[in-house]
Image 1 (spheres, rainbow, N blue to C red):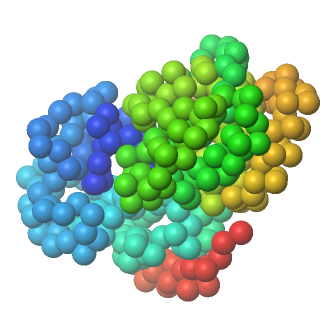
Image 2: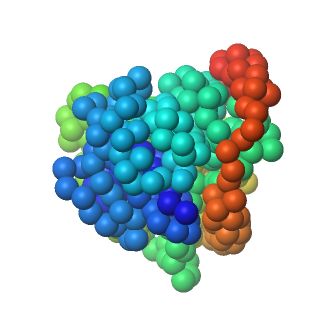
Image 3: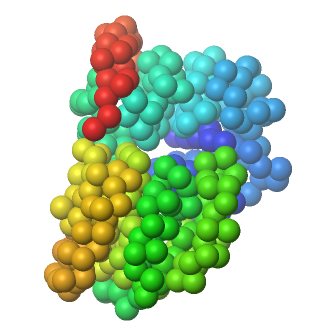
Length: 353
């Protein structure tokens, strides 16, 4: 079995959550594993062969799939996995190349307008939560919760910082800046995002410079995030919305409690092992900090226990994923699936909790 994934960026050079999740997914598969992405030189990363995708613009959803079709035929791909902006290209190219198409879905319909057509016409989809699968009209589809990195051997929560691992507006960076003003004697770490030029604060550096307890740090590869977690006491995720929330689970492995936006998707992840709050709610975040600090050891222990439970679930999901991909067959009739997805998307495209 040869599986080929298409994505606009890939680790270790592009380390956004969706791409890191895809890499961990690819690693779990059997057979030959390839990725076509935006890279000038081919490379091998942890057993996955990465090559340049034959597209001028990897962010153009409606790109002509024909050049990719030629690549897939030459590679003799059996299964093609599409993600984000390249989902539709992947599905159309897979169809023309005679391969099975799968869309890797990381968002519910309200955030998935760009992949709606790809999900609808694909052979299969893999969803990141059961809630997302239900909202897309496929409650019985395969679900792979975003994979986390291996847990540290034991709790390691001696850090003193309140940390947010993204500097984007929708991730609540302005909430964190406000918290830093409210707690001038607490240390705050803001890890900068590569998407900051388009989705960040234009005056972030200026605003942070006015707060001596705020530190701006560069984003690091997934295998180096521990450098920030080891400095962290509480992880802050006061986002506008999250469709799972992988960072809180990784922090929980260190016994680090989180304050996290509450969504049905998040409840399938860190869930009740964090203090869940409404998105972008400063007052709720302030109360949550005080609550955790009033009984830190208890929240730390609960976080670690949840991380261990999720790690065990992940091992089982990886085994099931490899079997699932190995046994995929071309569907005989996709009409019923298409109708279900169309109806669900129309019903749920505005659903936001």
